[in-house]
Length: 287
Length: 324
Image 1 (cartoon, rainbow over the protein chains, first blue to last red):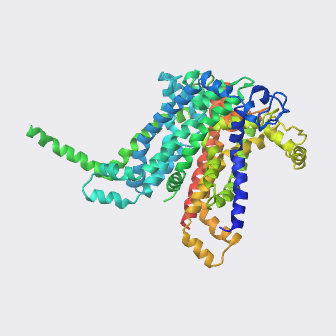
Image 2 (cartoon, each protein chain N blue to C red):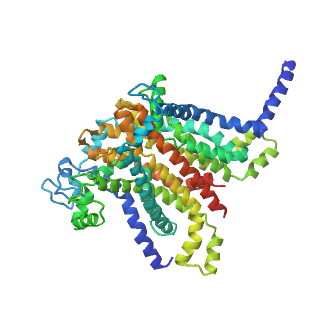
Image 3 (cartoon, helix red, strand yellow):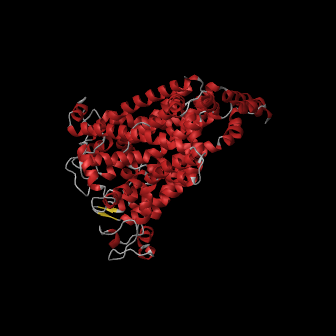
């Protein structure tokens, strides 16, 4: 690239990055603010002020760790994080068990109707949760799962399985068929070829599905919000708005910390698997 | 012992032979997923459709058959119309911003430059953060009293200019400094649209980059030899080749925005005066908060056929655009 092109690139890319990352940057500042500093309109919001609103070069001495401590010691936040990981992990396992065979069969064995069935399975993803959760909440209480993580583990695959089947179908299609045929020629059974040849090759795709399904679970709000009523059983998406917003009282600094802590590792994971995710995504739509 | 082995072998062989056949193996592998989805999505869906034809209220999941009453009631309700309009506005407006933004940003993000890794990390952040939580950050950014957006506008002496501009284009007349982003109907519509665009943009950028990198280098070379540069190249070479994948990005953007419940629920709760309700939040307000289950189900049902049409249509066009 020429010097001019490089400058133009930065002039475009940096403002976008600022717009997209600004809320997180500001959350990072806010989470360490003292209450008096936060609740004063005269104060500069981008840094830490003393009580009179004066700025100091050693601004970090006017920040506080109190609200992060509060989040971890006086709320159920650690439990919510743990619950989120448990639900996400269990849902990912169920999703893979159901979606991997289906995705493989649709990509390889089904022939002409495979593509149509793939689109059909994807349409299931479009059924709005606001429509399903009334009957589902009855189902959940009939099964005695109300107010338990199991309710979410049972219900979440309803949206991860269609998505994962679609993505995996795409991945399996990108694997050269010759690989399997060679194994079949050598006398391996189809299931054996699937286990020994196809699965290892499609591991990147499977990891992508794991991450994506997990993040769908972390994002889910309505089911988590309505099926579970006791604080200790909540996931982060439902627990944080429920316990850290009490009527008109917002625990702003703790809310900011609670958001940033899961967002950063998830963004790092996404970044690492972005290119593979792209591959599976386009493969599912075409080919 | 031997007799037993002899009796077992043919059955086992037949069983194994059956597993080798596509006709048997394919349905067998698909069945668990389909059975699960029928139980967890199909049955509740049918039940919800049944509910939408009854006068079920509160916690009971049955009621008297009322035909299409719930649908006609919903349709003639101004709040429903507004929720439908808002769903369309949020979806279309945010996707318009997203497509333009993603087309520009992806064009530059495929280049090599120093610090690309950190830029990519920052760009992906809104997509990685749980929606509910990042919306809470926006709630703070747009706070009625402590909004950092307003503070920054005021410091840059842009606040009065913005108020004038909003009045001049008839978007929000009579707005005052500091702007009540979530407290005035039209400003709230703008704010929610921006939040939706903000959270979908990273996803679209990723898909657009995929589209760009799938263009073979031969095409690049050929178009250079033919003298296609700048705008011409963009219009005749890059855009048509990217169209199918752009359609997929837009499709997902539409689905993610149209079914979203959290953004509106957290930012405005549908207010002020139900002016920002969307179909999912309005269905929740009617079906759960007011307890009219039947009508709530009917409202939810309006969205599904729309989404199915959009999806099937766009996948169809995407495939056709790819073949040509």
